[in-house]
Image 1 (cartoon, helix red, strand yellow):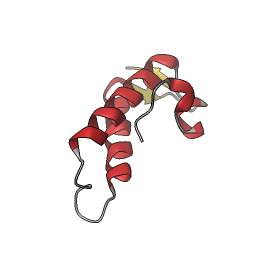
Image 2 (image 1 turned 60 degrees about the horizontal axis):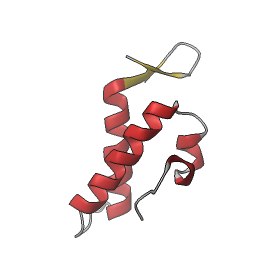
Image 3 (image 1 turned 180 degrees about the vertical axis):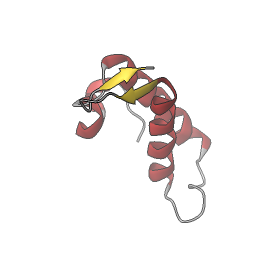
Image 4 (image 1 turned 120 degrees about the vertical axis):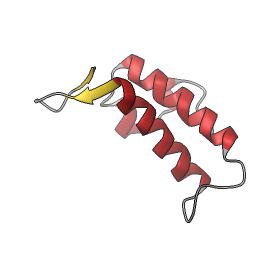
Length: 73
C-alpha cells in the first residue's frame, strides 16, 4: 500500500512530522514497500518493515527537540 501523497500517510506521521520529514517518510516507505515484495525480515510483515525503514530515514535527518517537536538536524 504505497502512499500517493502526504495526506495519505498515517495520522501519527502527518500530524507530528514537518512537511519535509513527511516527504522523506513517504519516499522511504514506498521504496521499502517495493524492495521487500516477499515480506520483511524475520517475523516482520512487509508493511512493518516498510514503516521501520521509513522511520529510520526520517531519524537520519530529523530528531525530537526538548519540546518533543521533530526538527531538522
